[in-house]
Amino acid sequence: MPSLPKFSLLGALVAAIALLALPVAADATLVYVKNPMHPAVFAANDSGGGAFKVGPGSNPRVSPDGDVIAYQRESSSGKRALMLAAAAGGGSKTVLTNLQDSFYVTFSPDSKLVAAVRGPEIGKGKLVLIDVTSGTVLRAVASGYFSGVSFSPDSTELAYSVSQSEDFPAKTNVFTATVAAGKPVQITKDGISVDPLWGPAGKIVFAKQLDAKSRKYGPKNELFLMNQFGAQVKRLTHTKVDPLLQGLYPTAWSDSGNQLLAEFEGQDTSYAVTVNPKTGAQKPLDKMGDGEQGFVGTALSGDGTTVLGFTGGFEPGPNHTVATIPYGGGKPKTLVKNASEPDWSR
Image 1: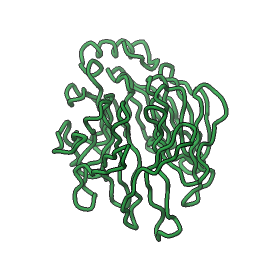
Image 2: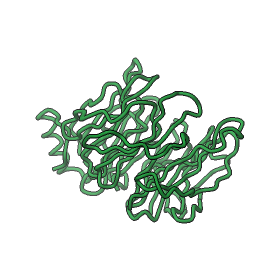
Image 3: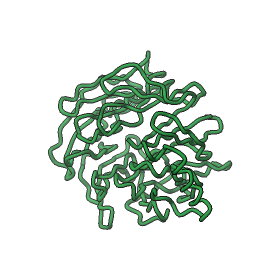
């Protein structure tokens, strides 16, 4: 029986029945969004079969054990709520009524916690930790303007980047904090470090916003590596970034740490790039033209062989396709037509 949010007794019974009837939790769980004008979250098995509607919403995430789905539900007035739902079906529960940005919703590797940023649409937010089983907020870790959140592989710590100003480019640094309690520790001091992604063996990949003074429209991102203490900093990538583009953001590590997925972003551009974590060598996956219609990468399988994402570009529209591509490159394999924003528990 999966670890479910505490729904009503009826909801729990429905979830138990659904668990026996559907192959979703038995294999791996795939989540995605359909109908961008009135978005709804769906769950299926990792091949796209056995699909069912979870509820109205967007930006879904699935726990690593495949049992629980987190997603954003927006009211008619524009207020965002964070929902938790059983991947086997049976209802959902509101755990935050003032979700600030669903992009930073992150499950811990042990699937017991969710990190999220709550607060007003404009202004400082608070990074909070939520217990998946009860749906209750355990504690607030930090406040400010966040630009990345990641758990350590053992689920005992967080790495996040935060600024105390809305200035562009903001003075942003990476901090770590223990999940249980304690004061955060600042591990970068350059004011240009964003989007930390914690990987195996204590490695953290993050982006530095470089050349802000020499570039007309803003800095470019390059990927760097460091350990969990902010030491052994190494530049990983050297990327050509046109003036209106931003560059690379880390997306996912493989379990071994031998594969790294990133996204190249900027104005009207977003496409997946594989990055060799030893040499920094890059390879775009199914980039089309100027990147507007390329393959958007959202997740990487644990064994590092397969990239999950969607075709048709990052802009909302009816013609997206949830698909996978081999990490080494190749033709996209369709999983779900007319769908986008996928995540999985692989």
